[in-house]
Length: 223
Image (cartoon, rainbow, N blue to C red; front, side, top):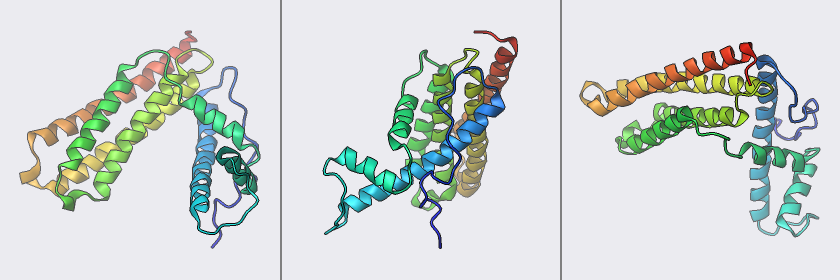
């Protein structure tokens, strides 16, 4: 079976440069989709490199310096410019310019869910719980990315695209929570469970409202 990651990014269209100028919401979404596809391939190949480094008795012509060896390995795997991709990832890790209460609430909710999930019986540590926790953390991550874009005219389309992804994760989380509640049964649905479920619904509504606010701001062309 052909490994879909074997070609690095050679068979993909040339990546867009880091966006400049005002992009609309749809163009940002297309950019993020292609960027995330590359990220998935990139992480797969980094993991492959680490496994390769640990292989006993390996023989290759990679540099002895670890960072240089990683770049050389990625180039062998078909990455045209891995250093530029790493620089883009580093830029994404930069903090937002201003505090954002929605981002903070999302992170706090994800941490609350994680702590609560650890206390559940082992039989409930199943796919529903995993889906719930992953969706909560992914949603918080997307809101943080949206906050890093900011709300200025040239970047607000990116903020909207990321917030829409966060809303999708919020929908997934509320659905997974409903499945966990069904697994708990009537006797297991405590006040804490009801409180968490309500918090998930409130958070989903807040994310949806944020999208409307951003779109209104974009339509007014406010800096």
